[in-house]
Image 1: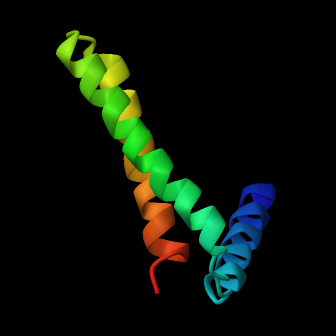
Image 2 (image 1 turned 180 degrees about the vertical axis):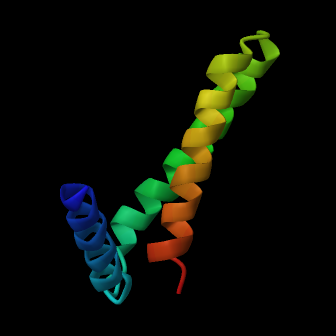
Length: 77
């Protein structure tokens, strides 16, 4: 029980220390690559959706959503 408590406290303390870190914006070139990947994943998802391959379409949509989150976090000014 002591080990679990220590692990939980250290995990909580680590998360608090990273909560205050600032994210540096990506370079313009990197942001263009991320933006392009979002479009690519959307096109791939649409192709899979039209072929009735729902699981692959969802995989590409999820990847696109993750890239969009990254773009919003570090590329939007």
